[in-house]
Amino acid sequence: MIWENVQVYNCSQKNTENAAVRFENARGREDNRIQDSVIHNGLGWGLHVKDSKRIQVSGNTIAGFRALGAKASSVDDFTFNDNMVFDVIRREDFGTEDMIVDVEACVSICAHPVGN
Image 1 (tube, helix red, strand yellow):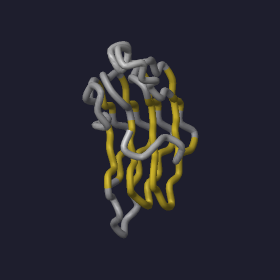
Image 2 (cartoon, rainbow, N blue to C red):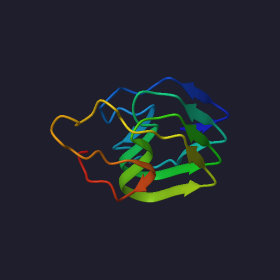
Image 3 (tube, helix red, strand yellow):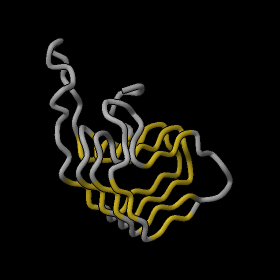
């Protein structure tokens, strides 16, 4: 998949790993590329790349999400260059009663616990 100059608006599910843009188990022979695009404003994560390889994310703007702007875990041959990730805010309604600490980051590459 080659994706250039695309806008994604208001796509992600609240309190799930269902990000606005996702690659899960993408392990084909071709490269996948998201370039010069905008992914913005959602109720959950912006970008999630999981158990995938040959993914290139370059020159994009990712903004206006909750908890995580961009997350990659269990990836091979993954490129994340020249992206702007900002305006990531905490989830106000997550874990406050049970004293759970929510992980927050603009970008998390192989650092965020698997399954969360």
